[in-house]
Structure formats: structure tokens, C-alpha cells
Length: 136
Image 1: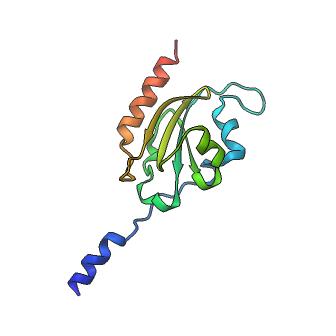
Image 2: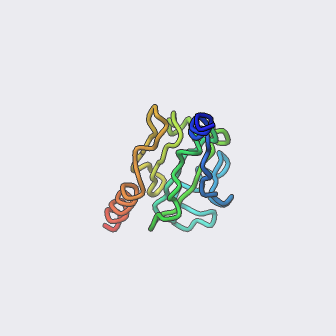
């Protein structure tokens, strides 16, 4: 019985923090969200963090998204945004892109091990640097 338990442990999927629907993008909402302007013509100069996500690798998603400061976070299911996936050359999920004024400022891509090679501290540091640089 001990051997059976040890064999099953690696196959247990841990529950990830749920991301509310309002934070999900697809091809129809992607460009307008990251462009830096609203539908009313107002400039939006916030830093935007976009995580390209896949169901098959949800165990390795960026679970600390709620702790990001001074940036808006969105998640994109790669199966629902093939045009955005292609445009930004997303080959692996998770991949995180950080945008400012509609331009990509930084990219973090999972490796062949499907793990995201970054953490909350590193992403927050990049956000802080981008925000500081845009003050001038």
C-alpha cells in the first residue's frame, strides 16, 4: 500500500488560485486591452502583465498574480487567442509579457521543463523599473 501512495503522489494536481473572468483575454479583446487607450480615447499608461496560459500546464501558472503592484494583470488561454499567440511568438506556456503603452517591455518564457523561470519579486522589479523609466 505504501508503494501505491508513493506512485500516486506525483500525479496529484494542486488547485491553483482562480482568476476571475474579467482578467481573461482572447483575440477579440487582446489588442484593445494592451494598446494603452480606452474605447473613449483616454490614454491608459498603466503597465500591463499578460500571462499566456494553457490548461495542460496550469500547475505551473503564475499563481501570485494578485500580489503584483502598480500593474494590471491579465491571463490569456492560448487555445482562445491563436492570433495573439502567433503575433507574440508564444511557443510555451506559461509565458509572461509585460507591456507599457502597447509595447512589449519584457518577456519571461517557460523552458522545456514547462516551468516559468521567474518569480513575483523579479516580475515586480521589472514593473517598478518600467514605471520609473516612464516618469520622464
